[in-house]
Image (cartoon, rainbow, N blue to C red; front, top):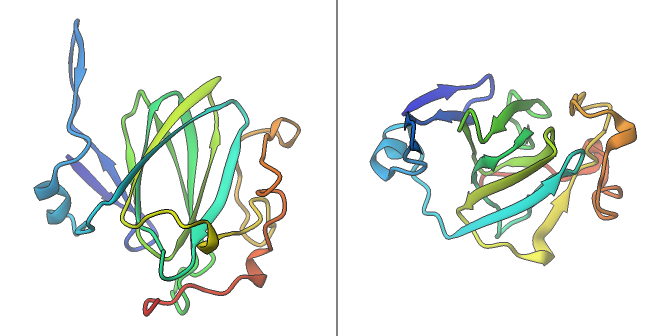
Length: 185
């Protein structure tokens, strides 16, 4: 397993070793010892999966205390542009984002620690997206940031005429109007 540090400390790209032949492929998507060696020591409590079509944009989502979440995200089939935005109060990278293409072909995963908003845009005809969470989903703690806030400068790599969003995701506040995440939460 290859663990790649990103420009934002704590956000990691995980490249598994994929073993393939004429029959197909095999790889470890989770190995506790390897992840702990990379500093990923979370206790995972929930796995989620979604299927979306081209242009679907989900996010930017996060949860407020006491239900904040770290995630490991990956794509089983198709391709997405995955985005994590630093919302940690006092962070030197506050308001910066990481964007990584995750696909069923490249098998990459992204580790997103607590203190980040998360979203993705589907780049293929459809995509199956899976993620581990270290805390349960709680609707009353759900929060969001406007996905196309100019202050964030995210290039979603999908023509805006093709964006497909939920009504909820069209109404999130701008980044300047959120309450930053604090470690003590």
